[in-house]
Length: 471
Image (tube, rainbow, N blue to C red; front, side):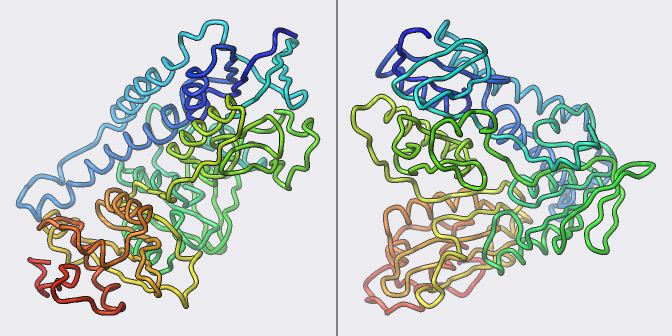
């Protein structure tokens, strides 16, 4: 046992590095312990390499609209998949290098190894023991692979291994059609792989609004088949893996397991803390302080299973880092919920999800982008946006969408929800012409029409031209 440290941080991912930033501002008496490769999940195997793959896939897919623009010869274009994957890895390595630099100069205050809690203030790494006043667990997560699938070896692919492939096989199944599964399935299909998507959840990409889900499903099914009525089962075949779902039988070369990620808490010693764990082995965590029960331990980022998103992990590392170095705990107000899926069109859920709302207390406004003017000029006119407002006040509550540039509209809506703006207050903002956000304004106008009318002198009541070229 060495001297008592102020803080031990377990994990050097997004949450761990955010915690480190705050801890370093307040003390030099800390230790960062990391098990496995350095570099965050986002940079190594998540957000960034997947977006590099998606951008290549979308660039190649644009050839299908060339004729509409008067550009000829698109059918003769080809794609060098090994070159695509080399670029993905090169970008990935650069992103990872940037995250690794954050912990490069820590010297003896950084330790590679597997940490195990012996009690609420003691950590073991191998045969060494470290004592700290506070501990932050930010050990990240890993892709879930059912035990029965492990017999297939390298034929089961996850985002941890996908980007290491030198090329892509001809046939792949993507099992799990949440955010990751939808993104990867569409990208692989656009890169020329024969993709089949399977999901046990009847809704896609984290959506809860059936109307938006249907719009997304109809668009994706034009690119690759989807099966979401039964769980997928795998069996060996002479020339690949057979995937079965109900009456559907598909033979593929490899299967991507996209059925979720699980916190890296197995073997970390939570059972030694003397508190009750739930059925998943998770302890009680206060989402506003990140404290575990009443112990001097904080659980942040993917490791707490709350929301596997970088901005949430960064927030939680910030919260944990401050509280681990403060004499009194601070309660933080969390950000407006925001989730974005980088499919084409973008999928986004902002604020309260449709499934969380009381239908009797909510108004709905929607806009189809099939005839939206700016979208038509780009041959990208597709998708549906739905917004939800409080019936009594007109305050915007949330929205779900699958629309072009949805990633940007979702941020505008998150700001409006955070500021508790009403539909009328949003309609007082300028909407430049022609922009895709005019489609969002159409949904707001539909909401406004269901609310008490305002004054004619209020620009929130400025109506539509009823002409697609102008609205």
